[in-house]
Length: 173
Image (tube, rainbow, N blue to C red; front, side, top):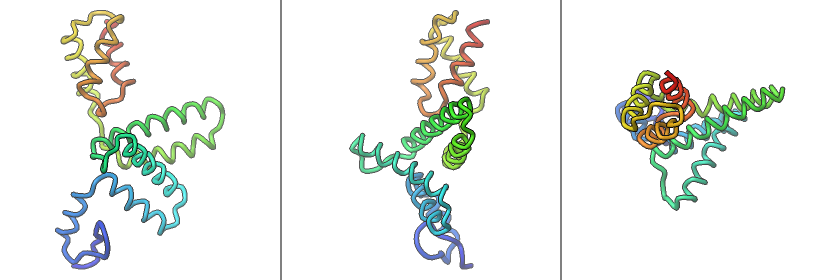
């Protein structure tokens, strides 16, 4: 069978080779390929969002003097970018600038395509309960200890605001 798109170059005649190339593709490479596709399709908004993501990756590489970013680093950076977009959407909505909020939402949607699904609320609750037991926290004043433990153990996997709300709920009982 021909016509299977390959990760790089002309269509592959072997679907297994195509599958292997896609599996081996890093997030950075996937962003670059999507950027090329957006250029070809003349999708201006998508191209802009992908360029912003790629620029963030390049800036991170320069900050750390790394030749490449691992997928874990890329995911952490994508989560950070998504959080920035959510904060911007809230600010723009509060200011009555729905046009800017819509633009940020469109960019957030594109960023979200590359962020793997996070842990379930039950999993996060379990992590927080374990942290509370580990730190012997019993009151709201000890929220920082609980937050520090969870965020240190699960950095890049969970949003701090979710951890804070669950920890606050559990400590206020």
